[in-house]
Length: 390
Image 1 (cartoon, one colour):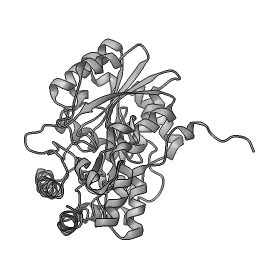
Image 2 (cartoon, one colour; image 1 turned 45 degrees about the horizontal axis):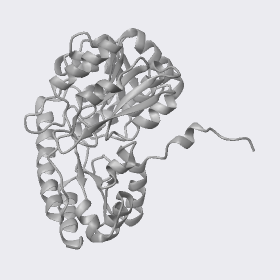
Image 3 (tube, one colour; image 1 turned 60 degrees about the vertical axis):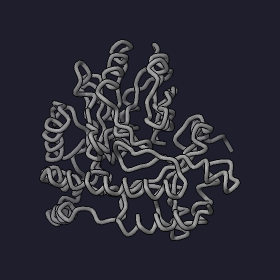
């Protein structure tokens, strides 16, 4: 038999989804994969049903139903301060996941490099490799998840085609400041580099954190692809409706790749998404308030259980240091600890090493997601604080 694809040997399957499968097998508490276990808003559910009954059940316009692209354009002009033409600058995709790989395939040529901050969302490394690029990693240092300006500047060179920025960040909860984004912008302009900005958690912010879209900064609109989705903001992670916003010359290429990847995102869900974008501002405040209370609750429980962790500025994850507990249990790596944690408490988490290229950097960390209903969070807190040996 002839050899199969060698590129698929350079990365593994998703550890996040693997932990979900393990959790499901034992009927545990899934704090590994970032999806809510509570109901999505009734209004968006009813909008989907209404649009199905209205006959929106066949292929959509390949790059997105006009109604949704117009809604996205209005929304980003108001919230993100990004001006874009819905006819030429927006591609609707099957979630932010497809938007990311379609964007990279549209940007990358063989020999190009992509800068990725680590810890990173686990798709970014494989996406870079699948697009033909070589990833270069710049470390975010805890507990505040800052980067070294010197290390960032050193990562740029003539081969640097793009940098991926995820703000608010998964898994750290970091929200990139305006000063940091301006520094990154300056380097991108200097080296003629594109920015791929994953802003899927843009409405999930805490305390005084402010979301700033890098595409809104001077001279950055033409070199930025802004990626987003309805998954997290509207608690419909299974609907798979996302988008990429870019200048027309980039969008033309993204649309070509998207067309042959998936043809189009689900038609009735696109129309429902357009309706969701007209929700009253009170909806977004309620979302932030719920997750803010959940963040405070889970952090208190984690600290009581023996984890070291800090308050995230955004998103709905906590990347916790499990060193003290691992030492008590006689464990030496994060994967063994994550499996042991399920055994002891029923709580599924994600090994920290899956968020790093250098696995040693994360082998004492685990990620918990707290986008769960109060019943789940209270059960988790009880399990963590009573079933882990002291």
